[in-house]
Length: 427
Image (cartoon, rainbow, N blue to C red):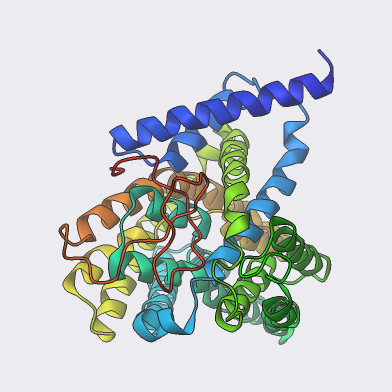
């Protein structure tokens, strides 16, 4: 068969299997993220090697496309109305989780003799989460209320704090090792973050006022895709955080576009296929060699990360006066980890090749574990923290209307980074 036919058959089979994983996810404790990752691993090179060769080059494009959409839709949750209700919790919990993860990881690894640079860099990498997996699990379960909304807010911004912490650790580790990087890494992080915010504002402000005019009150699909893709492409070209840039655009549009009735919901209907492909290709990229890791350092890193997330979630929830369910379950819900952590590990290994030989296997192995097991634990946390029926105070979680039959969001939920519940309550 020629390449176009193989491509179409491959895509068709992946989407059909995704329907099956959705059904299994509703009937078991496994979220579809984990099921799609496992499916990708089985059909990938490590097991049956069923994917065509061209699927490898697809991965980067698919991943970037999915992430810019998720970034935009998560940013849309950061409205002034939502922040007045959840903002204090989001800031306290996100900062506390990042700081506690840094402290617990660095202290624990240092005490067990991993070396100063390795301890600092692994501690910074441990702060990264996977907003794509977390947001999917939130909306697959259909849980609403303050816990789910706060969790989405936390995963939307905690990688910003993590990136700053990683840059600071790069500077400290460089000074200790005699490599005089000076303030370069920290300034680089500030440029990446500040530039992304500026780019998002420059594009978001005119977009808020100019879109939604062709079809009054509702931006068209072409408007939505054009703005999101231009923002993501420019951010990647300028070497800025494209996730943060698209989040800023989403937040600016959601707050300033008063004439929108359903701001950019047109984009939600096409996000789902890219997310499915992203998770399947991520699973296919895993290998048995990467799963081997380097033994005790990997185990220690994983245990300390779990401890740091739990401690940060408990302390942050207590400081902001959140309900007891937040203290018990927020740390568990923040365990998924993916691409940002791998990116940090690659940067560190480029600057210190000797350190990279330790860091890369640890991060690859732990990322596989947290990406497969993390969504399961996030789902457990969401279901255990959800208030009883009829007691939800924060409203239901917004849903993406992939099909016209799905209900529209309630007031104030104009921008939901979500997948729909496919009938009935997902477990």
